[in-house]
Amino acid sequence: VGSFLLHDKTGDIRIVLWDDQTNIISNKSFDINEVVKVVNGSPKISKFKGDLEVSVGSYGKIILSPEDVDYKLYPKIEFKVIKKSK
Picture 1: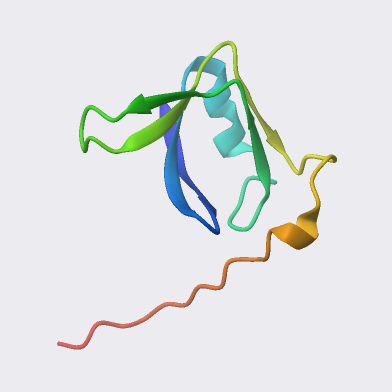
Picture 2: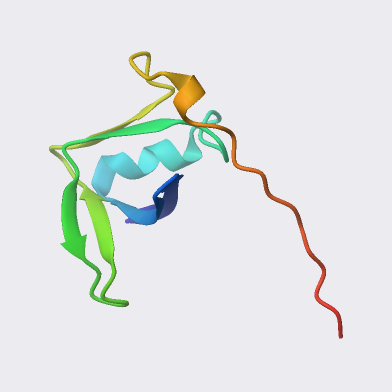
């Protein structure tokens, strides 16, 4: 089992990967700001937090850098490290 957060202009959602789908996490192209496509994911309510999440098992898959996506619609996420003051 593995998971990651997927972000778009509407917010974030946790993607839960099962079995062979977890291999995507070790792919060199899997990184912040990488566009991914979730195919045949199943929405579920998280048992831990009660939030909505998407489960991707043996009938689903994650596609890195899909060719059928207009990348102009998905701007890069800007992030920075902020040090906490004591």
